Amino acid sequence: MRASDRTRPAVIVETAPTPNGDLHIGHLAGPFPAADIHARFLRARDRPVVLSTGTDDSRTYAPAAQRRHTCAR
Image (cartoon, rainbow, N blue to C red; front, side, top):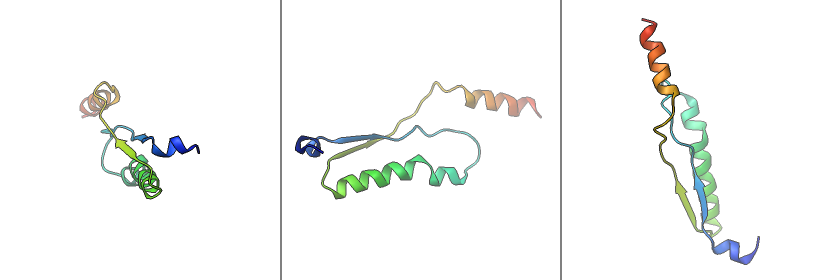
């Protein structure tokens, strides 16, 4: 790694949370802890880190799953 790379912030963007059913182990063992662990590792090595996440309001599977669930009753 070049010396200039050590001073540039590492940007880590977690995947957007998704409403895909009931709470399951994937919520705990998925990408969120991995991104946090990686950020902590870099910070421990004195690298500046920007850790971010967001939402995606244009996903279509949530409304489609809701229609399937509603129509199945």
